[in-house]
Image (cartoon, rainbow, N blue to C red; front, side, top):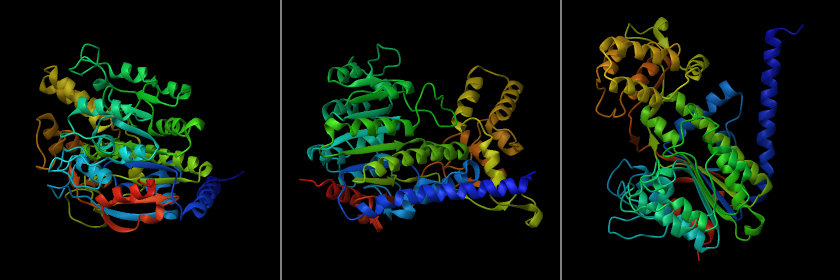
Length: 482
């Protein structure tokens, strides 16, 4: 009879074999296309993520899922790679709107602006350039589809909060694929969930333009049109850790359908440009939520694998994996288990055991906050709040010990540092960090340079260290701007 150690060794060997086979299966695509211009461009955008997050995705995927992490193991390892500076026109630390605007237009803008420069000019966006050059275009996001990044890559607005204006401009831009959250600003306020003040039903306007409209994951398999509008949530699509797969799709599902529509036979002449974003990696960084981050990194990587499979069949496709800025100062580290004297018996480092602990968590820190806030709003007594807190911890965070100093802050709406603005999520995140080593430096953005990794035709232009405005210039060159 085979013993457990022998079985484990064989399973590990099989994992290594299939991982290598997966990586090697992609190599011919790179070799065939590395020096030419692409017909199709897929921009996979992990908002708020850079090297520290990607390395965490790689390590956790290998340890817990026994799967290769395509971002690092394929795109970075087999393609080309650069770092990108991110400061905005008015701040060292950018926001998503300014960073995405620079990457789209090639010009620095102020934080909060959507592809409008400080002197009021509106240089053409990447998607406008693509469309002018005869390419089909698509925008996909787990955020509201009018959110800062997809908006900045396609239209213009004085403020990222100008949601109605951004949606109106989508009607004029006529993207071939538009999918994500954000149904609320496609519907008038007279309709349940709608927030538009002008009484327009933008869903109906798109349908009148010939779009197929879908709103559930199962409908992704029923798409037959060459123009698609898919809205799956009033606002954001949920974190992977919270997402109900019957109600909301994941990024890989949306990318699969988006590529099918954009690559339709009747529309293959000049190719396409697709922007596909996982916004939840940024939101997890703001919340300092390591468990949510881990699962959304996996979800993002699954979408990268979809793109790589598409590239195998369409080797004239360039895949770019990047983002806009780093969020949270993500800092897995070693240290003491507690405030006792340092030494071997009081030493903690990140191991598979810590990964297994966060893998057991069943809700995001944001979901925890929503449920706890609901109890507070009901006017619960002090003892009822304590009972509710203990129940939520047992339900969502098994094995987590909440120390007295942090428990008191949660129960009494206490503060942490001035750079912790997502409370009580950041407080509970500190409790998790103390037990697992997954620490965070802030709840905001940082100026950490952003990774740009690319594989396929044209990928050779991404190398060294460059500014985020150069990203736009390189993409225009690859698109073949007239």
